[in-house]
Image 1 (tube, one colour):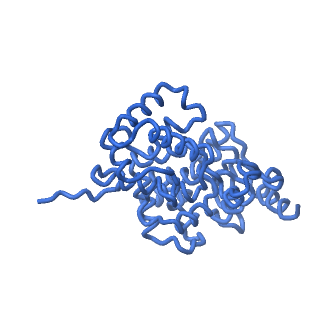
Image 2: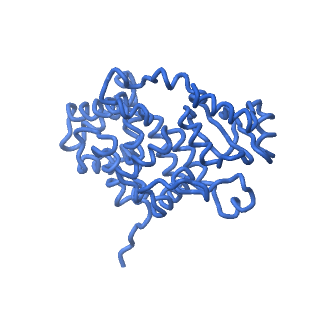
Length: 309
């Protein structure tokens, strides 16, 4: 009887090379000059296991000064069919991708999440805007359960910006299978660690920067408009009920006005809490942590001021 590995490709040793090939493909990280057979060699020699492994060693501008990088260069050069030049070319290709960066959509695609192709990746990127918000959504999904959502009305379904709540506006092109696959991915600790390691090892451009990425003068720069947005770069948590506005609508509104992410839970990274009716525990925790709390009226005034400016 043949035993088949039915789990995620990256966690299935016989098929893991396919996950790396997918991550490094043109639609993903676009790493030049590395074939499937050569990636298989690197995996069989335990030189790499996850997509971030090469970036962790060769991603830095001055990797030549690293003993670890020199050791890996030598190991790769000694493999059949490689040599010093091929080893060096691979390292340079990795450094180029790490320094030039990739759009958020291509990072999401590179993760190899089932049912998430190029178009779905673009839709998800458009909804979350930046890698931190996307990873926050994955973290929240990893702890979600139907039981906890029934006990606490503040807890929204996973990936509510895409498909998750009674009041959510569904993103066309993202169906139940894709949402289920995202949730399944979030609950695999090894996959989540691999995703975060990859995010730390290269530049990932926000959606508003992706559009201008072909122009080298705009890469990594914020527009004058974004610098003046009222919630620019902030992590904002909503609690309680806002008059005349659903939570999903409020989250989308602050994202358009520069917010970095709108997670469900409060932490030391939270910049602002918007307290609606029956705000409860989250408001108290925010004040205990010294996080600024504003009420619904002040929040609505900020939104109205931004519309008139």
